[in-house]
Image (cartoon, rainbow, N blue to C red; front, side):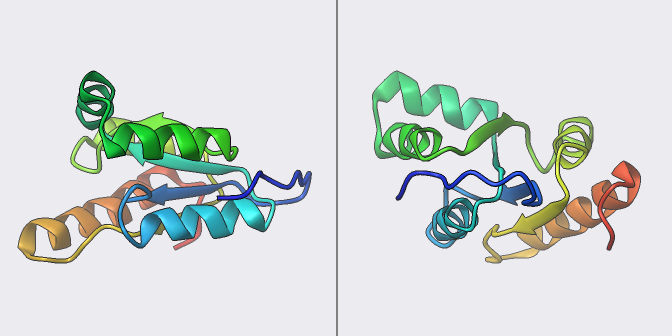
Length: 121
């Protein structure tokens, strides 16, 4: 990942699933384009990653070093999801789609966007 280019005009991007295989590339592209970039991370996943010094902990450190801001929340926790969305201009979901659980999560994201009211659907 490259260092963030500064931009005063870039939209703030929230990436849900930004630590996944595709999501990490979306985060890098957003940073490279000069956008302030937020990455939604489950608090339990982040603390577990730090506790075991795993690849996830290294990825989180790399994202932060590149200029991303970690936002703790969960797409299954409406309150934290809405709060994260309220900090963004654009929401990108890079969450996997292996089954109905992930599909339900996507619907929760859409509902949270509507509730937050600051991102056009």
